[in-house]
Figure 1 (spheres, rainbow, N blue to C red):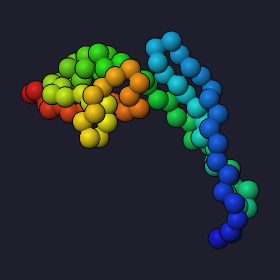
Figure 2 (figure 1 turned 90 degrees about the horizontal axis):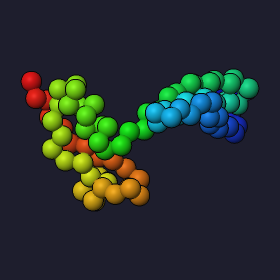
Figure 3 (figure 1 turned 180 degrees about the horizontal axis):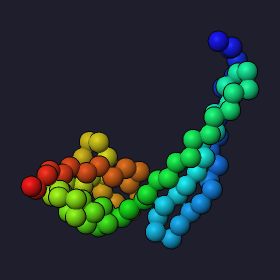
Figure 4 (figure 1 turned 180 degrees about the vertical axis):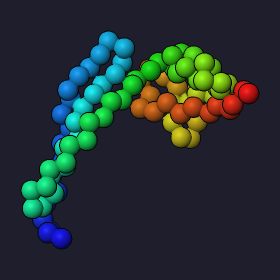
Length: 87
């Protein structure tokens, strides 16, 4: 296996009005092997997420803004959800 510097970057390829961001994650290994992994992330508001989970058969018991139960706000870096199956 070759040793050396690993190079990585992300290239955004699409942003939609419904909160989806598509990007290509590039990884170039020593020896020039170049892998590209296309990825799409869907960003939802807490209300959208609660509705999607309800449609999927889950009841949300808590939404917080961090792993330690921080209050959820518009500036929260995380959205942590506790949900249980209803059926």
